[in-house]
Amino acid sequence: MTGIVGGCGTYTAGKLVDVLARRDVRWRCWLVALAKGGYVPFLALVFLVDDFWTFLLLYTIPAFFGGFYLAPTFALIQSLVSLRMRALAKHYFVHPQYRWSRVWTTAGRHHE
Image (cartoon, rainbow, N blue to C red; front, side, top):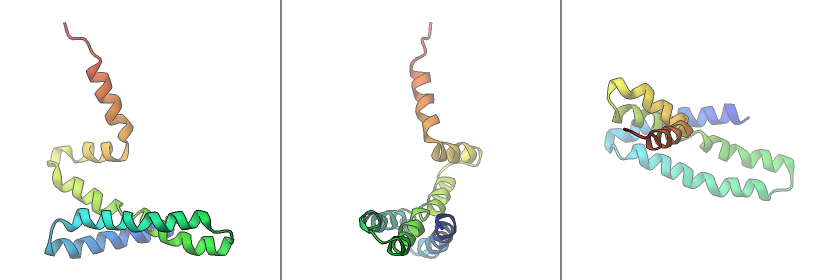
């Protein structure tokens, strides 16, 4: 359920941010913030419900908004970096642990 509903959320966010960004480019960030703000209360409600079917019904909302950030964020990252750096920027966004291990490895070296 999360994959299908989350995929619909990602697709919807991509289309919605395309429309809204024509008016104001800042909607690329605002839409992600609004979606995550709406995501949290419903996710908290999911954990407070005892009935399984109510849980499934309520969980569709966090599942939809859970993937909502992907399309606008990937598009924003791709538009902020140069053409040569796009793959690296996406890699550091998807795998943030490599970013910090690289920082610590570089900082820990001794140069003579």
